[in-house]
Length: 226
Image (cartoon, rainbow, N blue to C red):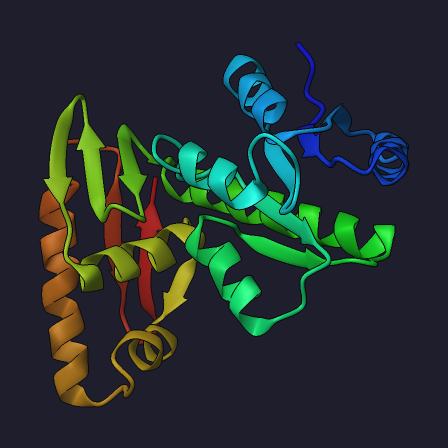
């Protein structure tokens, strides 16, 4: 299995395209370079790259049109536009057509590489947040839900936030004052009572797995034991 990141580069300026391709390959990326939008779309459908770098102005299908077509079925693969256009509206158009980033020519390769890594890290974080294991549950932070043996349990926004912080400090004490200020804005008596209610709700939603406990460490906070 190849764990390297694959990048589809669509750039009709052959010299620039080759420079970008070689520079990215020295950073251990797998890069496919094509010279027009139609070839890019066919390669995308065949190879499903991890990230796309698209020139805006290229023959057969421009970068904006290509991205718009891809976004009909794929909302997550990162897209970086390359362009010599510099007007604010051009940048806005790029994001409206599904781009995640926009790099104006001329640019440094280091800047492109930094932006690629930033987008890939963001995608990985989103994937991680969709599959957080808590005992025999799968916690999907983004969808605000728990799954237990194909049973979906919906969470409120506050329950999701509280469970996320408990999980991030799993088997450690989550400071009561810290989480109250973080989620409620104040650690006063009434907010503390409200948090106790949410803890009780989470316990009920996690009670299908006896190995999971949320214990009250009196005077300090709560601890999620898994």
